[in-house]
Length: 193
Image (tube, rainbow, N blue to C red; front, side, top):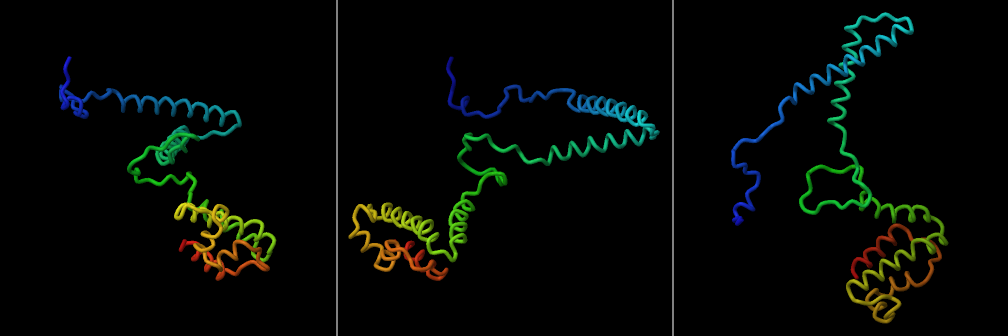
């Protein structure tokens, strides 16, 4: 059996030219809705009569149909379920909708710096223990990626690349936590690496 490239690349071309549709879709939906409505009305009427309430049946029917309509609308408007853990996301174009339940990497990165900086605002020991090592890791990573060295592997070259103020800041514990302006200068120096 031989197949041409056109046969392989033809997408959705049905030789008969007609697409088969399942019959009875609307009728099946109406039958199911009527059955569910009737069953719910019977249950509600029996429950109301059991507690001694007499409500006209048309009000019960209208209430059940309203509940079913709200259920259908909310099901149609519900967001898709979150992806399974470990599932791969398809590459390529984005579908145009935002997955609000996913973790935002930018927010996580900002929180990774914002919380420790806020936490050690006036405490020198906290700054020296928590933030200064992170800044050192960041400097080492930028040096490694851009110049192939770290502060530990080639201290002389790293010192020359970092500059004396940044080298001193990263190497010696501060007597006080830096001000936001000082941190802005430090970050600007790190970005120049």
